[in-house]
Amino acid sequence: MATLGLIEYESASAEVRAVYDDIMATRKTDWINNFWKAIARDPATLRRTWESIKEVMAPGALDAVTKEMIYLAVSATNQCGYCIASHTAAARKAGMTDQMFAELMAVAGMANETNRLASGYQVEIDERFKPR
Image (cartoon, rainbow, N blue to C red; front, side, top):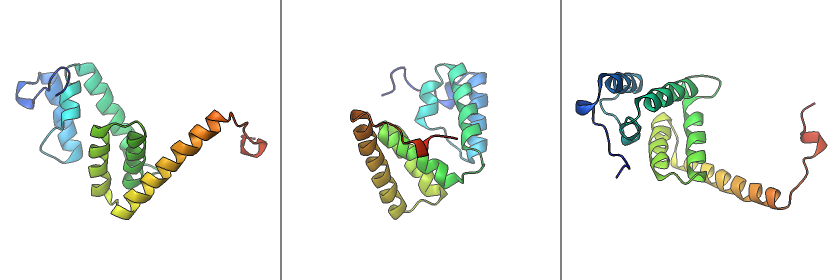
């Protein structure tokens, strides 16, 4: 259960409903997921977070499936079960296959392992890797 409970559409303030309406319109859906309902206890955080998500996840140099897969990999690394579920669903909707998921998890796992090793050994950055 969410720490402060969830704000359902029917009991939301006009300010929260406006954000909910934008989420549903942007995502072409008829429901609001629990993440948004939980942070709606603080309408300013809800609005700011939604505006940032819209901007970052909007079409750009990276396609939708790539953005969702990056989000999924970071969520797995951060061990956010909710985010893993949400962004796995979004990545699948954008075209991620089972094989892509498996490869993504292998890369994320390997990156975590080698990152810890490089940190633990305090490896100096090679001159060739530094910006010129």
